[in-house]
Length: 186
Image (cartoon, rainbow, N blue to C red; front, side, top):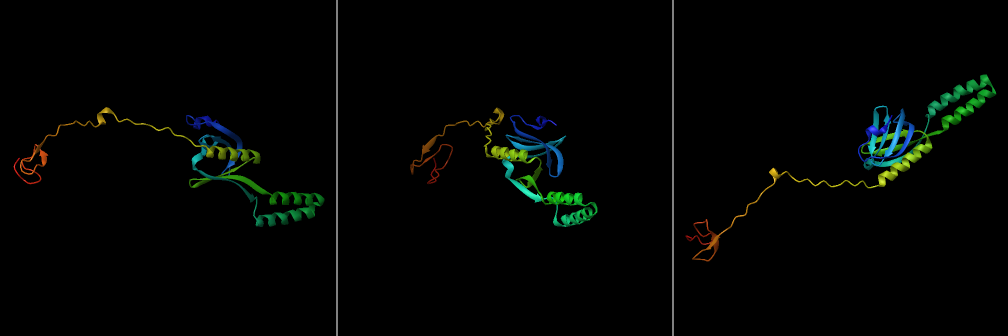
């Protein structure tokens, strides 16, 4: 699946990785762009903008809980008794596999989290490049909006003529009949 149909003008892919599991679903392709981290599977997209990412963390978890481990050990012990040495080797391999921890990348931001599993080296690169892009400041050019001519306000100047009151000397508009200070007829 090509990511280019999901990109916006000015968005460039700086890292890509194939065959990832995203939130427990397989076969995603992962991309880090100068604007976001995006995961694409056919026409399904999961994304998070770089400026919305609050943290990236490398996490580890056991493959199975302790209860599952006990059941598998009992079954392996029974198989070991029946099969002999091959059974004991099988038990050892199963125990090693069960005790191994599963590692994955968690991306946290704006009320959501994305769990990404896959090749450890590819996930480490994805994490490093996402951090690098997060640290870059995205400049958004200012848009100067000029209102249409019909919406512009046109102020007409007018001349204001004042006359002096003959009684108190206060300046008053020529349109007034009485002095605003003493009330005398103008």
